[in-house]
Length: 435
Image: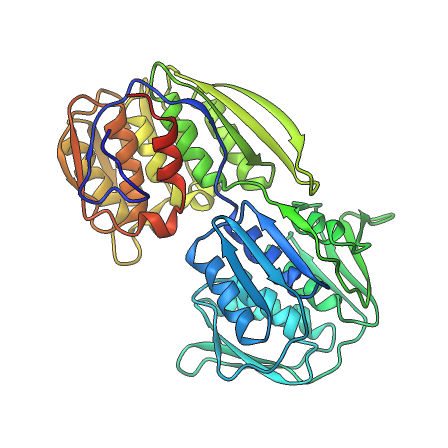
């Protein structure tokens, strides 16, 4: 297979008999942002292994440098030198990441100066984070002129309590990051336990965060007694569930595969993806353990499988939007039909992802039905063809799956920023690919 480097631009993809060996996963992007942000408050140098190199993660390091924090990279390890924040010289643009906005808003809400954050595309997310921080006395100046922005800082935060209902990662990050600098208790109440990844990061760095059921009522309480100065530690993060899905499906679609994928996460999205793989009849064995940092993760051993079609709709169709092209590609070699509904969001943006997938799978002689909110794929055997991903990296890696399991050579043109949106994935694929 002539895939060289992290992109597939201009490369011919040849069918493969399988994937074999062991490979880990690139880091979880949102957790990487949070780990870097929290490490900025620690005394000394923190190292974050298996740290994602997606654009929003690298942007985290760039923005922290604007407020006086050193962030350096060594491959997929980030080195963060904690310190005191200074006023930035300009507006900090988070480039669309609500989690990054929330982390910075929480960290800087207690600063003696005002920082303006911009670049979030949804006012609903900004408002939820802002309301939570205001429950601790934070001062926010939100503007929608020329896009959404918020000025934050210049006040001293106080003890307080915030109820979020359903667990919300952005709100949790903002409140707990702010709570590190509060003199007194900060309480976050949520209806269910939610994922514990942020809690693991804080506890590993010496924060005595408490999490418990609310006595005599439904829900959970997270309680942080500030102020807290975190310790510089080494974090080993779980891997990206989306990258895990790609590699697991690639192995399952090829008959001679015997691949072990390590550091698959245990968060709610990862659990949902593992459940999907079981529904697709992927032959796999799962071993659970914890990283040295305390994150629960899984090693997943996959062998070539007789895949079966599945239906994804409703909440799953909406929540798993960006990985649905991978499921459609696997449907091209699965028994029966793969049905994807309630995925109309894939038509939004510069590329109509549904139409592009339909067009390219048909070029590979796969029967595909197109619907306003999804598609239906009838299993068969993809045939090599010249394809065009229309600049969409999600389509590109999905078509790579179909090409590996097909007959004849395939050329994917206009692949888009595969190396930026899925950093390290194609490198890992080539390392375990059988010739």
